[in-house]
Image 1 (cartoon, rainbow, N blue to C red):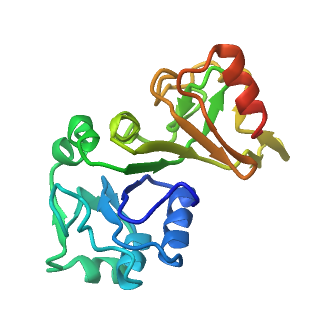
Image 2: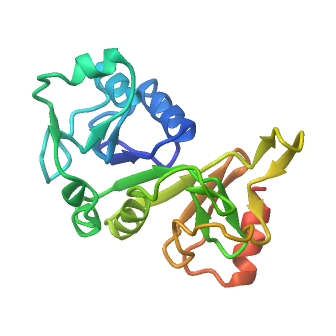
Image 3: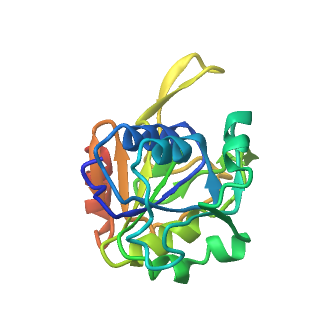
Length: 217
């Protein structure tokens, strides 16, 4: 939250973590927030009703909330219906990394299944088993990291409970399990956040990356 400022434009990815951050933003005293995202979620509606959103600092589609699809409750769909503040556009537009990079202070917040000490992000498989789609995460990770004043953040809990094995497991691993898909290559990953802090991997050596990620594991 301390890295999000008045006038920033936001993208939130799928999953509980980005949505939870969205509700924190809705409850904050931030103002003039913009929205340019692939998926429109309930927390964006909450931001708008709280007066956090105006979109007036976004030079592209000023005053509009741009998205490709929505996922949520009937309340959300009723809110979207004929809402003149909202603008739907194809994924080839919303997810255009070059377009995203031209929006100043663009903040991209996405979830992950796990990450290895090289900084490779997996957000779509459990080993070789597909559990989600590739989606637009890499487009926003790339575009936000190039935005003037912007940043890309992968936000995730440091551990998860493995029901099959009946124990806690780290999401930060020495190496990813065999067959894991790489959603974001290490060369594109910028900030990684857990409940223990946030680190910037961009430009770091392999040893520095490992130390940084261990510090938030």
